[in-house]
Image 1 (cartoon, rainbow, N blue to C red):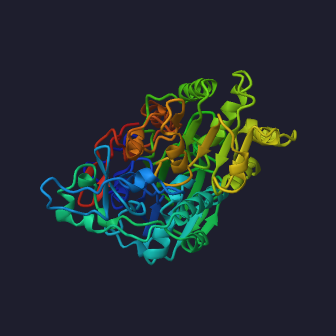
Image 2 (cartoon, rainbow, N blue to C red; image 1 turned 90 degrees about the vertical axis):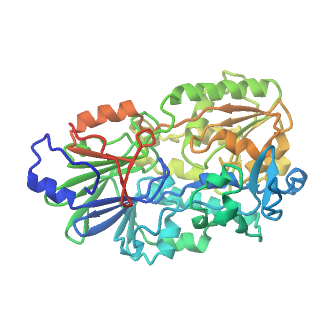
Amino acid sequence: MTAKGSLSHPLGLTRQLTARLCEQSLYCLSGHPTLPCNVLKFKSTTIMLDCGLDTTSVLNFLPLPLVHSPRLSKLPSWVSKDGAVNLEKELKECAGRVFVDSQPEFCLPEKELLDLSTIDVILISNYHCMMALPYITEHTGFTGTVYATEPTLQIGRLLMEELVNFMERVPKAQAATCWKNKEIQRMLPGPLKDAVDVWTWKRSYSMQEVNSALSKVQLVGYSQKVELFGAVQVSPLSSGYSLGSSNWIIQSHHEKVSYVSGSSLLTTHPQPMDQSSLKNSDVLILTGLTQMPTANPDGMLAEFCSNLAMTIRAGGNVLVPCYSSGVIYDLLECLYQFIDNASLGTTPFYFISPVANSSLEFSQIFAEWLCHNKQSKVYLPEPPFPHAELIQTNKLKHYPSIHGDFSSDFRQPCVVFTGHPSLRFGDVVHFMELWGKSSLNTIIFTEPDFSYLDALAPYQPLAMKCVYCPIDTRLNFHQVSKLLKEVQVCCVVAFLCWNPIQKCGGVVLAPIYSEC
């Protein structure tokens, strides 16, 4: 692998094999630690490993309210102290922070480092790591094939559809571009001043682009071997992180490369992680570790339930900003076991998303991708997830938006699960405006991808209570250390926030382990 430093071979790796491995190249196209996009050139085959979309850039923008917000509309324009910069149509000020007043934009994977039209295949590890796919397949000349498991494809489609829906419901004709001028940007206050490559930020794709991108996906099952041009064989393994999530084995006749991304050793709803198939890899590419190593998921779930109960008993409402798939299944399962004991049986729970119904249904039908305990329930027959019973007993209701049936069914105090976790678009913006002025209400952050302080910034001053319970089941440093000893790899290439990566001529690599 191309890297600064050398590869040792304590397992008797021959000099010839070392030389062959060093001819390969690995490029990092994403600066986000858990939303990777890497390109591996291996045996004359160019493979993109994931295409995550960095959505943290949206924190620099004002929220998109579903109904007119007098508060947001009255925010003052930002003008520099010396009056030299006046972008009154583009920048607004709120509680000492400056925000861009236009449709939020996303930070794409690096597209200039490589000619992305030369990518032969794209391997997707989980549905969170495919959100940039339409930008890659529709705008770079890509003509290859994308490989993913069926749950990854279907839930990824839901998340993309939800994102497009959020944006199209509240269109903003005005595009703010003047602030991106380098001379102007350097005079802005932080964090806008420090934002990187803002000219590459893009608005959301369309559903037409989503459908075209996903038409290029070929479905694969765990341990299924796919031949690439007769030179390389790829195979997905369960990573234990989410429904259908995968690690990948990339193998030639003489070399074995493992790609580990977004993996979990905890017992949750997906199939457990397949560790044995990673053994004796010549190179293991490691990314997507937890960014919350000290936040124990079980402890966070307990704190989540405790704060929820305290708020409801005091007559307040609870808002849970979340994605429409993933952790929400675990939250609902935890609440199923908790609500009766906590005397919350009459409290309404609402799940609001354009794809809420599909998400809840998908979680019940992908039985073969679930852990053994949940698989066995299907044959009883029993629904694998308890939220089916919550829906049947009317304790959990789901709606596509705050309009329509929800308006007539809505009663308080209640618990609302809705998106987007950034608090910049989606139905969550409405509830922030509705409940933010009362200290009886609580917002509980469970998604680890966003700084909760930055997410709350455009809503200040805020009276509602804020609780931070990030639930991140991905591997931590200690789990990785143990895993590497067990699988006996010869070299590990890691993209890790807690280990400064090395930058060498555009190729970003950090081979921090070389001993077995």
